[in-house]
Length: 152
Image 1 (spheres, rainbow, N blue to C red):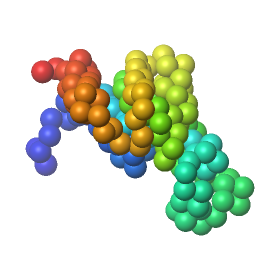
Image 2: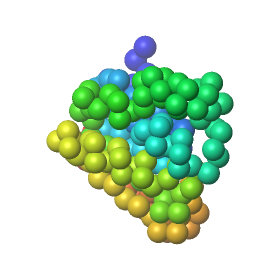
Image 3: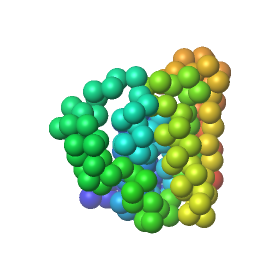
Image 4: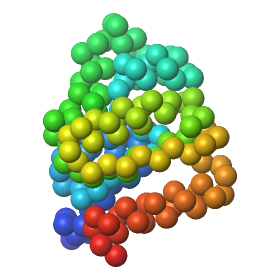
């Protein structure tokens, strides 16, 4: 369609958008870089650690032990063999909606693949950044990550 340069695409998102970012880099290599904020990586571990115990049950028509294949199939970690996209992972230390362990799982998987990855954990930060200095830092990191992999 000519809307975007296919050689200069980046993907990024926070929360569900972070999950979609983690997901999309396991499904395609069309993006030159990615930034995931508070993104899910493993739905089974997420099921047992987030602050809304039934949220995934609602999305997936049951608990993980009732739908294990579905939970695994929809987890970015289950598709790590496909990842080639450099990823910046941002997470709040005090996030109980999407626990920080979700970010660490994705970060470690990307790094172990030999794909460039960085992770930043913001102290005191819940599911969304609130302190102005962290909001500003996140904006700068987005810009710097894209500039590094796509150019200015």
